[in-house]
Length: 190
Figure: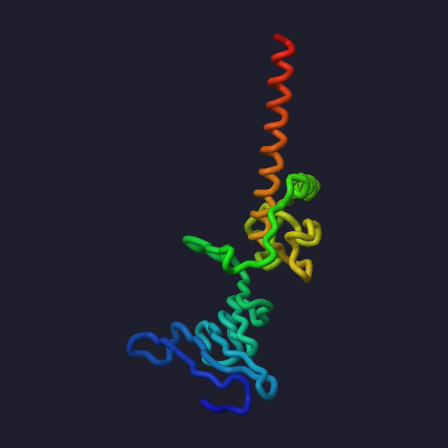
């Protein structure tokens, strides 16, 4: 399909059986562009219409970024809404990393202190409206730098889990030290 206006597209329309004038559902699969080599591949839901702009379902930007539920993906994959998966795997092999240095006990203790100062909040996402689901978590602008994104608007969940593991390690060490002190005090008492 070739057009000199947005969108050069294919329209998929499902009509009622034997009645082409009763539209049940329409989708547009097309290309939008604002200039030479500056465009997007899009899939839009037109509902029961056969014209106009629809609800953007999928966007593949010129840079290869994919957006689901957003027309402006800001990462390799940007999703507006919840994601459900049976599993999430994160590349973590030594073969994929460099400059590997285990955290010291002191660094783990500092992380425990930082997390202790971080507020956990209840909130709703603006995009979910007034009746949206209540979530529990941290606010990106208030988290330690180690887990904040470079733009300060999101949190790296993998680094968050790793930070929590460092805090657990620090707490475990503190518990062992306290147990040793208790054992000494019990011996003195007896």
